[in-house]
Amino acid sequence: MIPEIRQVVHRIDADLPVNGISPLSDAINESLFVERSLGCLSIGFAALATILAIVGLYGVMSYSVSSRERELGIRMAIGATPERVLASILRESASLGIAGVVCGLPFVLATSRYIQSSLYGVQPNDPVVWVSAMAVLVSIAVVAGFIPARNASRIDPHSALRAE
Image 1 (cartoon, rainbow, N blue to C red):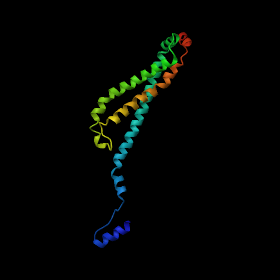
Image 2: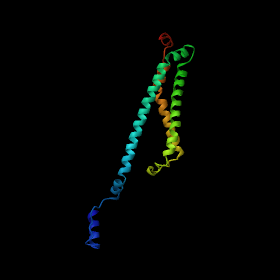
Image 3: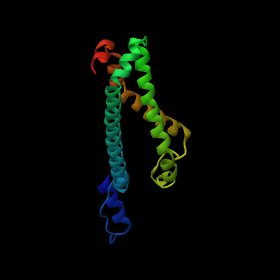
Image 4: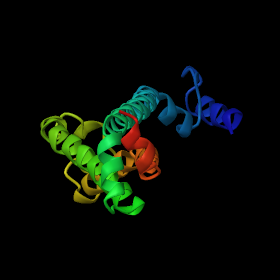
């Protein structure tokens, strides 16, 4: 179509230069390059932060379980089932996730107005997005605590009591 456009413009005004003709989609892509790059960079940093949070929470929960091995062994020796021990450790992990959400909430509220211009199709105060993000973060905390919780539920009461 570009040669035909040049001919039509040349017929109207022969002195008018016709340079840099490109499809509208190319112009839109060029104008949104910076925003898309920042969006991809933000997603990358968010993924990295999430991975670091998972690893950190796993480490904290693993350390907590290993330091409480004797206590958990005593609980299992006096009748606690492995399921109750598992649920107890997962509850602890979920409470850490909830505490993280509560601590981060004021920062999110404070910065939501600043990122409003960068959002497309989502309002910064959309309750569905907020609840979904909080649920994902608490779920990540529970998933990070699952392996230490499973290890805690498999503690042998006899060996835990004899360890000291």
